[in-house]
Length: 133
Image (cartoon, rainbow, N blue to C red; front, side, top):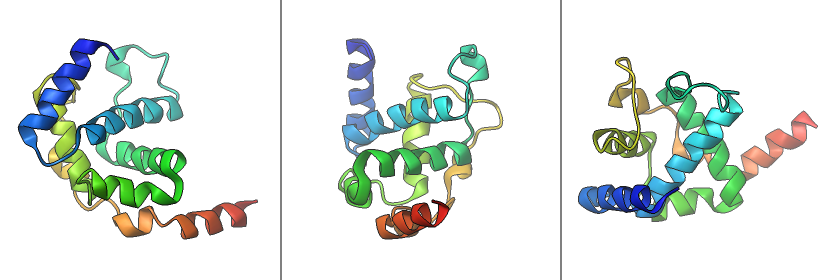
């Protein structure tokens, strides 16, 4: 990320004030992770679109991979307590022209997609992984 982008992103976070700058940076990284997971990295920028639900599932996976059992705590510390919060961050970035959207993308796509406590339950995730092995 270049300095101008980081400065613009910081400005968006400060203007909104609900979420830590780190939450914005994390979401941007989680988007890149999700684009890669969906095999879209090598596509043209216009073809790399990820919808809200897919992005949220990528965010959850990335958070658990990055922060492990502390994912829930870290997100709460940043002011992110529900899926809608990530939608607010996305649309703040869209409004600032730091992210793009399609005509079909709506803030409502991010509302109540999953329960935070359940999605970031580390013990449950580890049990699921063991059961797959």
